[in-house]
Every structure is written in C-alpha cells, then in structure tokens.
Image 1: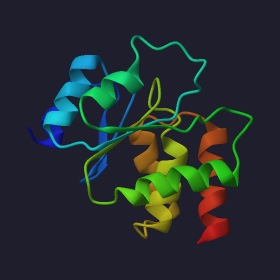
Image 2 (image 1 turned 180 degrees about the vertical axis):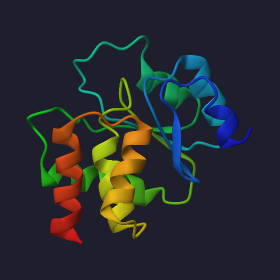
Image 3 (image 1 turned 45 degrees about the vertical axis):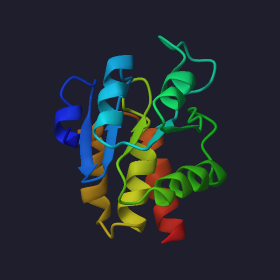
Image 4 (image 1 turned 30 degrees about the vertical axis):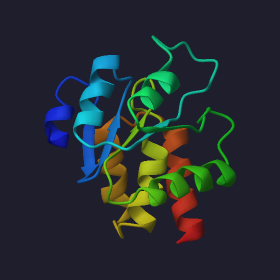
Length: 152
C-alpha cells in the first residue's frame, strides 16, 4: 500500500518528505495500514501522561514496527530533546517513518529543524511545510527554527 494511500484518513496527515508521514493520532487500523505500507518506525511525541485510545506501543510492536516515545511538552523544549528527535529521524532516513502527536501541532518543531538541517530547505519553506503539516504553536516553531540556526 503506497504511503499516500496510508494517509487517507489519518488526522492532519502530511507527507513532507517522500518517506516521512507526519500526523495527529492514528487509529489502530491506520497503524495496521501504515505497517502494510512499509512504515518501520513510529515516533510518538506525546507526553506519556496524555490519554491514548489504546496501548500504542504494544500495538506497534505486535505489528513488527519500532515504537519510540520522545515527549514534546510546551515549556520543556530543549536542544537535548531535539537531538533525540533528529537522531530518530536520521536513523530511519529514507525508510517509511511516522512522526505524530495528538493533533500534528508538535511535529512542526522537529520537522522544521530536519528540513533545514538535513534537507537544505530555506527557513521560510520549512516553516510553511510545518504549518501545512499542522503546526500552530509559535513556541514550537521558534524552537525548530532556533535549533536549526544554532546547529546549521
């Protein structure tokens, strides 16, 4: 199943890179579809205390995909956190990967940094891509841009 087909019903789904799906919370069936489409890594950036509709880690593991939880929490954004997120994306570069939170807002920060640092995208274009993917937080946007400028 092609990645674009996998995106069909996932909330706020976007394909900012040919191998990277950014999204809000997928359903169990959408995770099954992602696995069928070849997704090998799920990066969940919600806080462990946020409510979840099911045990995502267990489901993702049972489907043979890797599950990584790196919480992105407003007010606690750091270089160390961004380092972890970029390392996870880089470890799977070119292989179908899903980066998600509850609404796709928080995916914007790491997406901006990745697009600027690893894809060579201009700041304005990276911010626009992140906004198309669901970014609405000025704090998350500033975090992604500042990280990319400091580490670029």
